[in-house]
Image (cartoon, rainbow over all chains, first blue to last red; front, side, top):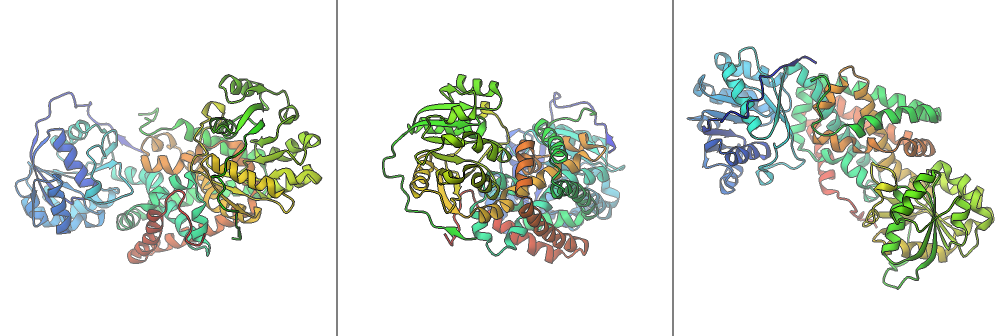
Length: 308
Length: 308
């Protein structure tokens, strides 16, 4: 993994607030961002747009946005910061729809879970305005979607990965880092490819496996009774299987090569454990389980790599 | 699944406390049981034994047990209730070691995660005293082991499955039900085979998959950096991979046929999702993910089957 080094932590410097956030997508991720930005005093006005007018209206009623916009273009109009919080598959069309309003002074970020496809979409949509775009992925979320679950603390303590293109303006990259740090995040930069490989391992594959686990139970005639006996281990293991189907469809398709490759790695590890079980090799099995158990017991959320 | 019907809920009737609990295995499960029984006023004295003398001593210092016994046999001596809270592979040897003290008045339970092997071990060890044994599996736990994690509320709200043999005395079966209900548990009875099939699906396989997931990350050169970017989804998905290796070695080996069979079901479900991903069949993938997501979103811990 080629981690690009970020500039020094900048949160100590006072950050000048943004005049206007154009929020495109007022769901869980977008809504939580707007709430956090407001609470931190980092934005004066939020103009929001969602595909579903009822979502936009609810966002305004909840105080997540100040003004409803009838289109993505009108949400971006006059904004010095635009946040795209839409399914990754909608990135290109959304950027195209606001393109002729984009200026070098406007900073645009996304919060998508995949980055190779998002960067490709931005290249294709923004062309000579690509410098305004800072691709971002805050590693956080909930298994429930929608603005009604927006949470001012969703981003606090989360890691945020920025995957700038070679054209991204350094002023925007620094400002993006400063902004996320001001929201309590830990910021790193890496290439879109390294991001997608890593996230396939720690996020996309686990989601796929959790979905497959649920599917595998549902395929059984006694599914209902089986589920009635599931305990706390099952609850936590499958929590992410309640994720939003459309969002995960897009992620799994967008990053399919890395996901399928990581699934092959996973199956090889599973094969090995199963061979030990089938051979009733107690010591061999215990040794493998101990490696896994120790690694998991010593890991915790936000633990830094020794190499970073 | 052939669920055996239990008698009516009996918790309303006042339960006569046990005189003496012989606790064999003073770890997380045994220690929590003793604490809960004491708090409910259902036992006058707890005599405990653990393979490791330092565990037994710590259990006494913590007030989990009242008296340290130097052997399993001496922990059982004089007890009207014996709880075996040892790894399932140790069941037969432990029951053999106390066998000549077992009377029809003594009730013996275990808390093992597998039941076919435990019942087989009890048949072989107890022979004509098999009627005293009520095989029990409280579906709860923690990813940390040891008496220092013993928790008076570990069993509260948990489901407990009893898998009586044809020789189990009905008086003991009723008393066992009453006891677990007095600790706040929901009690069901089923055959050892039905228990092991169901638990393979909702517990043993998820553990195997979580161990394999950790192993699959560790197999990669950049494991350390990859893990540093894992978020809350990964945290919950792999929580059970921190489980105790010896305990899970025993469970996976004892129930290996059911576990391997459930793994084949799981792989078939994973194959299907991956085929849709490889074919970039967005609608087909979304349909499948929606089934899984809806099922998980509507499930909750302790949810009863419509059929029960």
